[in-house]
Image: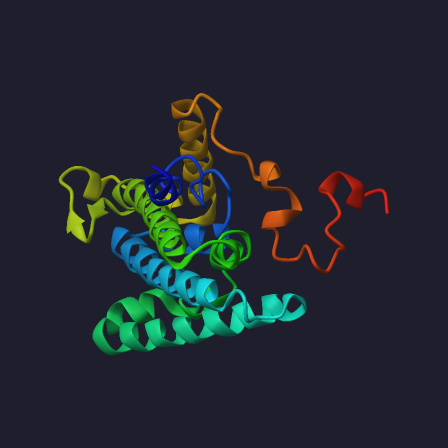
Amino acid sequence: MKKLANLTRGILKENPVLVLVLGTCPTLAVSTQATNAIGMGLAATAVLVCSNIAISLLRNVIPDKVRIPCYIVVIAGFVTVVQMVVEAYAYSLYQALGIYLPLIVVNCIILGRAEMFANKNGVGDSALDGIGMGVGFTLALLAMATIREIFGNGTWFGMAIPALSENTISIMTMAPGGFVVFGLLIALVNKLTKGKAIKKTEFGCEGCPSAAACGKLKCGEAGDN
């Protein structure tokens, strides 16, 4: 049951985009087309799983004081491999994702799972956590991209939809449309979970990659110092 929970929590209860509100920048940027959303989601999932496994294996070796820089180096290595694979075998996707593909290195979802989960759990659980969070990220991207592409371009995965293709809502492909869809999906998840989806504040400073820099103060105390 624990392994199943590790695998499924990222899909809805702790969805990194719609519940934890992480990775918002690439989510809004690449969710204009379903193809781009799937590509970004798969790339991020591959990096998540590989980095979680590597960091779990190295968690007893990496000194605590330099763990964040070490995590970034590990993540950057996997991102570089994924970037080269995408460039070699899916060049059109590589061009469409642009700068957001290498920027997976600093994606809060990747670093957050390394800090909060992988460095405290075994390899198997860390791999399942990476898969679950990656699937949740991909599904959130796909949901946003589906809505924005259908109403903004009148297409889905590049295929024209009768009637809609001639009556598009161009703002859906722009930033305002992205924020509207993002907000509506967050509200939908909150409705489906009856407000019981885990909140970011429940993690405290433990889940924040910058906790070491601020002395691990609670958010409420930080403003008083």
